[in-house]
Image 1 (cartoon, rainbow, N blue to C red):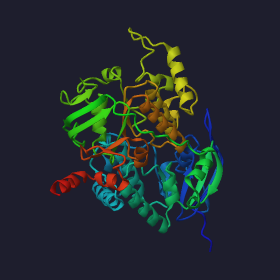
Image 2: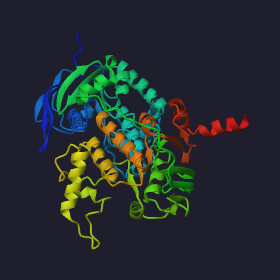
Image 3: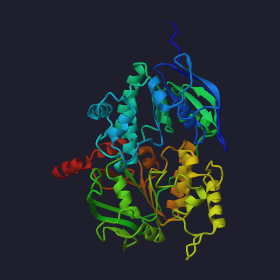
Image 4: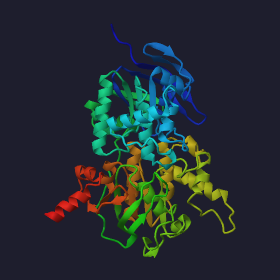
Length: 509
């Protein structure tokens, strides 16, 4: 007897006011298949996944689940059928704990204590560090993603939808997750896997459906394709090759941290301990590490959101800014891109034009009046320069795909011509073409004399653009090393804080 397809979509279409997100999409997923959905930002991937998960209703088309026609009207109904999803933009309640958030989506016959115990067991078996008791508002973006993944896995799904699941993991943990996904597939679980990391898709997935402008443009076995071939299917061309020339020499000392130590701002936060960094004009210093090891606290201390740093511990071109406001730091030339796009990088309900005013105040006069014309023009220039797919300067930030909003936010700060740019997760959830564009802009900024501190959990990215690297673990920072000294294995080991043991061994030798 031939086993029916786990999922079959026929002629799925969805029209929004400004764009047709899906246009007659056909997609088939077999039991036990790991199926990649590949496409550039705005190609319609997220809308299609939300239709499968019941969060969005299609205008046209049919959904077959295990051979039976279904109309999935809500995520709750999807979960009852056996479909779980991990969103790129998370669906967690900030005021509840991780365990309470997971509990909301499970059978209420389970007690919170039972759910907490199961979370710990699942998290340990999958190599995902999750503290069930921590309130979500104290978690970094990466830690929230882990909660989402664990929540999805706890439902024992027949179909698991994963959107950019590896951006918070070390290289070793990625391999552990892949082993788990392969085991799930062997047990009959189907997996829809969205990632912009082409190497991952080629290593993990059995089949790949490519979307462009809402339509299916190809289906291939990614294991037989090169990265260049997948790129051409996705964006119609290969991404531009970055030219990472050696820095022109050590410029002026731009940013210096002198033994920066900060106690936890919240009970579940990470204390910073004796952080020392030196960042020069005309260089990119990469900061690697697994999310939740103090990156969020370091970014807050650098941006001015946390002004508790001891006097003299944070210096910008020799000037003490440890307790300066974020506005004063921007006036001195330090700009900042947070890891959290919606809520911190942009106000979801405001237009792109209005969102420029969060950090760009050229159009605001001394009396506080805003000149709307310049604000509108700035937003339009950013949309054009950074190839942002949006319904114009008046489009609400929340209406953009994650990657397009990221391009706008990064572009807003790059366009300000900063002297120092501190940027977290610059290409999180961004397609290969847009990622190459953003990385190219960062390198151009470096070549123009800007000093850049780039915090990223994507080692490939850091190896591609950094001049030197440090690693954060447990609120501490490793010694800086040049790219000639750095290897994936070494940085992966240092993510567990092992540089201290390495240093002790050298000392004994």
